[in-house]
Structure formats: C-alpha cells, structure tokens
Amino acid sequence: HVWHVKISGASLFLKSHSGLLPVSQPVQSVERALGILEILGNADFHLGVSEIAESSELPLSTTHRLLATLADLGYVEQN
Image (cartoon, rainbow, N blue to C red; front, side):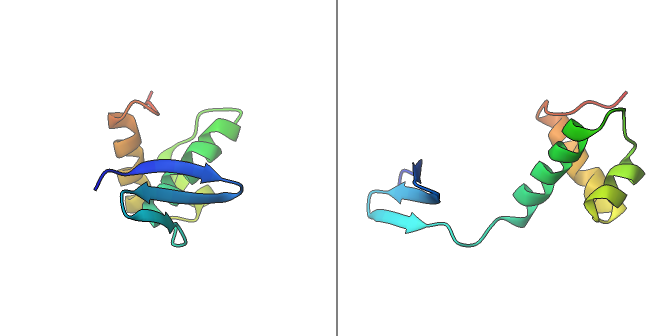
C-alpha cells in the first residue's frame, strides 16, 4: 500500500489504494512531542527538562526521550 495524507474538512484521512480510512485513534507519542514543541514555542525563556516535564505532565524519563528524539531530528536544541 502507498499512503498519502488527505485533509477533508475537519477530518484527517489516510488514503490507500483500497480507500479512505478515518484516523480516530491519536498516536500518543506524536501528541506528546507536539505538546512539548508547543510548550517550548510559548515559553519566554529557555526551559530545562524538569520544567518541560512538569508543564507537560509527563514523566521526566519520557520527556527526556522525546526531547532527545526532537533534537536528533533538528526540531529543538540543547544549550
């Protein structure tokens, strides 16, 4: 199958050769990573991992892993 993202109104669908499948179950790690990016984007100053974990209500270890992945992908950097 070849997958494409298609936005139809307010609904997100994944399109394959067999038809459209509604996306009804969010991917938790994506939600968490985007939440961290929102926290960092809205901050007026640099935040430490403990502050990000507290703001995101995520465990410190999860926050650290997500930040490491975001850094590896070039979305965040550590000073």
